Length: 274
Image (cartoon, rainbow, N blue to C red; front, side, top):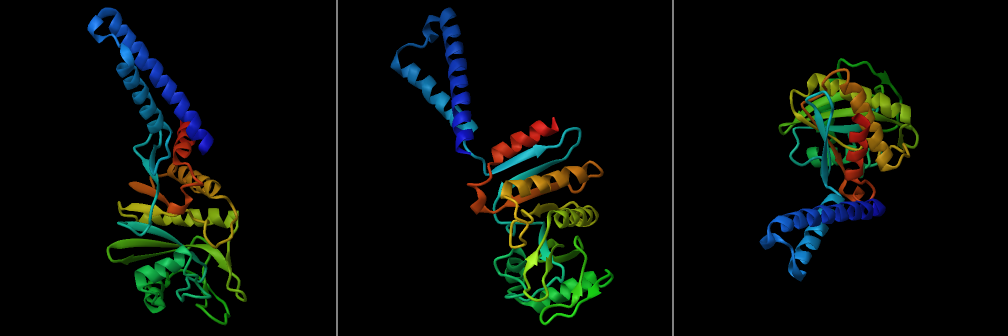
């Protein structure tokens, strides 16, 4: 990222300086009063060039990418996915466990959802998910702890809490002995398929916020930017078939600002889509 910032600063800074100096000299050739002379005017041109270079080079907290030949676009931003959200995607394990601790880590997005939205009360979480999952086929598994019904990857439970719609999408499998959740690249794409289908059918025009799925404790093992590429690729694949939602926002954790350069992401995808 540092190399990209320096490169952009030099390119846009020197380009701005050249344009400003050319324009100023051109006006000065015809209008003596407007001819830039002295340290003051030279300093003005230098300062403006530096400011333009910095503006073009510094990292962004949010970018919007438009999809050619459609009226659709999407946003990639850093922030808290639970803040001011109409609809949110939450990746969960295949049992839709609600008990915090060994079954669901409080550090996972699944765990934060149960803790923040239900005050850690698994019974409320279980009640709502049972209602929406009652007609979905599952397999009963013998476990020493946790819920017994196992659902396929990509299964999505849709629940409404406090004027927000949540899409709880199965991403990971859970080892019945160690209770550790894990997922593969293939399972990630199966998860995407179920997620996009649910959003298409049930987003109801809401702005849907989607986290960096697979970056938590599921153990997929890809760097954050590669995971973002995966989910954006899936988004373009499915949106070419049909419009998924009026507005989609991909929300990245604040602590990934040093790892993901949104300006580079925007340029790469704009170039790839043009």
